[in-house]
Length: 133
Image (cartoon, rainbow, N blue to C red):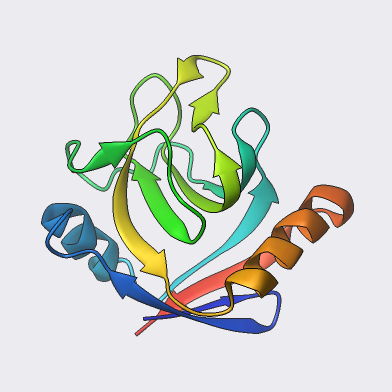
């Protein structure tokens, strides 16, 4: 999979063995276009707020502590549906408290650039993102 953020390209893999249902649900929504904003409570990460979008999935391989480059899908519950991308130290949370999201993909290239974009998003604001095959 290819992820493009603010004109920068990242290679990524689906974590099929860890979250097969989440991977399948996200694939059905590709190509996916959105905007990232910096997280508010979680630390060094960006997120894509998705409101009431329903991927019709349950928890699988859910974590609150993703590593840099790991991508989580929070399937809705005590917070809105969202995608979180860690670029540094993260404890996934919302105003409702700690969250756990399905680790369904991982960025495999340009992690230094991902961190640069994350910090830039904090200071400069939202950026475009797309996921494609």
